[in-house]
Length: 513
Image (tube, rainbow, N blue to C red; front, top):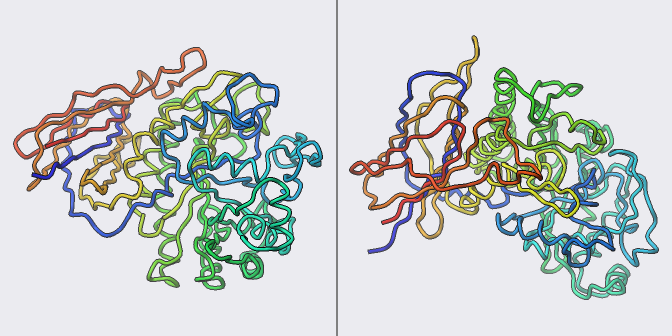
């Protein structure tokens, strides 16, 4: 008999002290819809300590590195199988001129990072260094081109430098710089946040400009481009409408940016660690807005693209809090709590459930910036609670989407309420089924009963990520305060799986025949 494997990834929490709630879950048969691995992508901008003093160490550093690329970070990211990495920005992309970052490092011109802290960068980390990092990570590069302050020629020649395998001025320079064969980079962003830091453009102007830039970003033999247009800020549906109408199939994808602000206010976003129940609730309200945004932007795209050929690319998402006290406000360094793990799980469930349209996403950002996976302090490195969510959820990458029916209990705060549970499921190539559940109630246990009719399984095992408080964090003195351990709260009752979900927890169950 063929071995069948089932897995459950379960994230739980709640604020309301009530009797335990029971939820009945029905899993529908597998569809042909695939949850693209690229939904699990990441973002590394020249911002704060993400690149310099993050991925890229000083040339005299004693931290283990290969060509100045920090190896413990590489090993951590390889473990969670990051599928793509976006670079060099962000806002930085539209002031970055790629030819300043190639050739001998001691001859590269210095530049001022006007968006992030006004620091001077020496351009020692450029195109070759980034693509070497991607090769070490075994991930696909996603390069954001400069539309805001660059030129059509500049972008066209960058594509040629990266992808052409013939005789040309750009390939000659590439070979002089030590790279014989092209990298054949597929993912290419045509600008970033063109409605804001990327040029303060109107959607009509940008969509016309995109057509011009994209025309000269050529497909070379063996290296077709997946061109991604700079899309909307949060709920700007007119931007999406205009781009779909004027660009259409000329783009592989259209971006959407949305950040979860605890207070909902940009000028006082709220602390990463010091928050009460009321602010936790408002944070989750703002996180869950992603469901509405993806649904409504997808509906606009469906009008012009009913066959869903154009991907919705959510290439900046995550929680954005006030910076840690005493740090450079332009560096966007924030801590990462159990609350942030719940945000990550919730958002990824939303993307999985909309994987017919959402086929790429990038958490902001990978190291030392915003909702980071990794924090560093000199030779020390810690993995954040968010990192562990990506470790658990990697099972969904390129798996078949499974529709689910359930009714979520409410999580109440005064006269307001949000769904306590959100769920997604998939089936991988081996037949393994994975179900991810997020419960946003930190005090209330929830019992889950799932019928698995027609499926043979005998044993269930699990893992859990939890801590005493949702404000708990990993620190350099206590790096493993929040980490994954064994879970024993799941049982087989006939053909049903019964699970008692502890408050404030992430659980992964595995069912085997």
